Image (cartoon, rainbow, N blue to C red; front, side, top):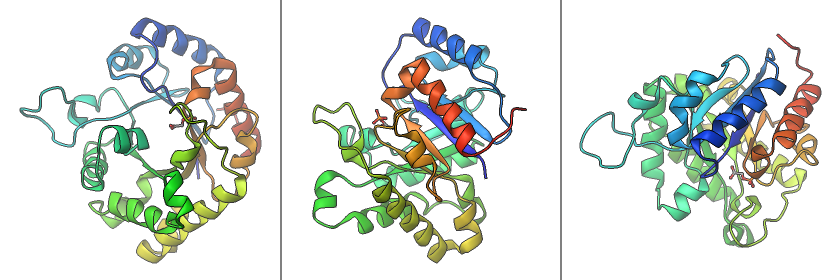
Length: 261
Ligand code: PGA
């Protein structure tokens, strides 16, 4: 199983800044055998960065897209338009769900559209603070996971990356984020494996990459990457700081014992 270190730049950096930043990362990151480094810049920077990047070292993801292929959808961009630029697509990030009102119905169509277009979806799931305090975590995770995968043929399930991102642990929303304890994360990742096993069998469950995200920093990355069920990290704030992001890649390489190509 590969390890995935994915930086979500969100709505940060101009095209010029993105290009300079990628240049800096490319000079520091090496190509590893089983470690995928991916960054998700703003949509406007994708074209430039796709020409600039060395995909053996750093691949690109989009942060969002619409599930139709073409047509009269003002302001939207489809996977058919993005597929030559990106290898991955973030789907259902909590900021899309709670700020822009994306529903599980939209999300399942996006997951299926990405796969159809040959782009690997990164399906984000996670409970809010109040859902956790009302004891609803298990139900929310099950609904978002099986809902998001419900249009995916069984043979494609393990092509989807699942990112567990508890909403209360994500930084940058006014309220201070709480750090998720590795124990909390281990419990939910295990729950995700169990739900996948019940629904699709143990082979598919074991082969589906599970990521964690929410205030990951170089200081705590190892505690999450060491978890049995954790195959990578989705990183927001710390992915905008070159030494932080490259340190996390080095930690992943060490923890997962990967070799340079
Ligand atoms: P954060 O964001 O690392 O800044 O908490 C993670 C995410 O939203 O994917």
